[in-house]
Every structure is written in C-alpha cells, then in structure tokens.
Amino acid sequence: MTGLHGIVPILLTPFDEDGNIDFDDLSREIEATLDTGVHGIGVAIGSEIFKFGQHDRKQLLAAVVSNVAGRVPVVMNTSAPGTALAVSLARDAAEVGADRLMIWPPDFFPTNAEAVTQHLSAIAAASSLPIVLQDVPQAPIQPSLALAIADRVQLVDTIKVETQPTVDKVGQMQVAAGKRLSVLGGAGGGTLVEEHRRGARGTMPFASQASEFMAAWSCLEAGDEAGAEAIVERRILPVSRLGFQAGDLFYHIHKELLRRRGLFKTAYVAPPTYEPDAITRGEIDRLLTRLEGAQ
Image (cartoon, rainbow, N blue to C red; front, side, top):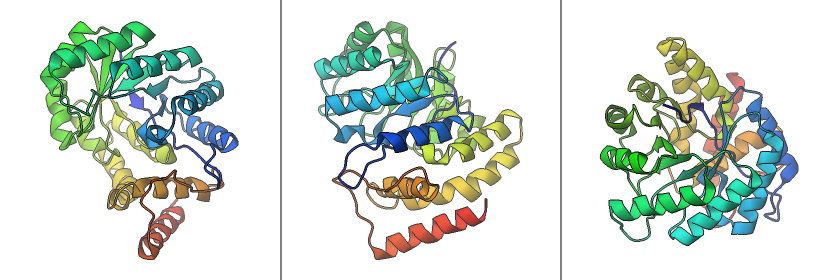
C-alpha cells in the first residue's frame, strides 16, 4: 500500500492589511514548517482557499510549489460542487506542480455512490495525480464507500477522516480499507494519540503547530504514548479547545500564533469571518502567552 503518511500540515495564508496575499510571509511560513521535518505540506480549507477565485488559488499554489522545491509532497484541495469546476481546479494543480489532490464529495445536493465515483474518476483522469479522499461532516464517507471508490479509482490511495467521532471512524476505516488506503486523522489533531492506536498513519494539522505535532508523532512512532499525550494535552488541545468555540475563530488564533513568532506581519483573516470580541481576544492573548512561556 502506498499513500500519504506522517504529519502533513495545512498552510495558513498570510495577508497584508488590504487583504492581499503576502508572499514573503508565505515563504517564511513554509521554511519554518519544513524545518520541523514534516512529511508534506497542504493547501486546503485551513488556507482559506474557499474564499479565493480560481486564479488566486493557482497563484498561491504555484508559490507554495516553488518554495517547497520538491523537498516534500505538496497536497492541494480541489474540492468543488460541480465536476467541471473540480476537473479545472485539478488541472491547474497538476499544471503548477502539486504532487497530489485532496477532495471531498460534492456536497451542495446529495449524490449517490455512483455519482461520487464518477466525479472522482473524471478528476483522476484529468490530473493523473494521487488523491486523498476527505471525509467531512458536510459530505461524510462511510468505510464501505471509501473502499468502493478506491477499488474503482486507482489514484485514490489515502483518506482523511474528519467526521465525528473521528476516533471511532478511524478505527472502522482502518478495518475496512486499511489494506487499500492510508488512513489519516484530521479535525485539528486533538485526538492524534487515540487515532494512532487505531491505525491512523498521520494527520493534517495547521502549520502553526507543526513542531508540536512532529514532536508528538515522533513519540508515537517510538512507542512513547505517554510522551505524545503530554505534548497533545499541554500544547495542542488548549489551542483546539479555544479555536473551535465560535465560527472560524481558529484562523485568528493560529494566525496570531504565527504573527507572534515573527512569521506573519498580520493576523488578518479574509472576510467574512468571526471577529473575536474583547473577551475572546483576552483569552487568545492569555493562552498564547502561556504557551510561549512553556516552551
């Protein structure tokens, strides 16, 4: 079995105060992420690409591919509600040098298994890139469907599980499709240890905490679950807990984390966004100050 594995962080997109992509900050983020020893880098929802037009998506990905320069695989999310658009996004990704795609099934209207498989087959034929299936709440993928898709679309070799409860579903997915698909965790990575016990071969967190996830992953691969649990509980879960309390608050927290590290000039989140109120900003400040002091 081949497929994606290890820690594959999703980049956050840096913007200037006018909402333009800051490519200098992007380069710094990529280098800092690669310096942690990650196994890949992704551009996806965590990068806010759903707010971008097709040209800007392609421009962002081209910059990422150029900066990574083949050091690790680059994964691009090309999910779209229509097959024609998804095919076009996939062709763009292949053209600028992405190594693989990540796709969830069309979710605007319900579709059956055959329609989902045809959708993915068209994308695979257009790009010839390996595909990570993305199991998300708006378009859940049951283990039986994942296996059926993988059997018919040979370029599908990985699935990222993000439908709650992720721990149980990772276990089910591993039993059903683990000999055919590499199973990854997701949804912030707060249950990394539990997912690893059930066969997960990696996770895709925010790039802002790449070093923490690499440290925890190294512990897990060395059989040190206690060490991994300590890292998750002290440094990863507090950020996830606050980040998922309202809307897209997690963007503000992770970008502020990168700003404090000197990688981003601003913590600007593209609109529309949940703007933290004074109480929440105080909570973010106290959390990140505490994490900085614990390093």
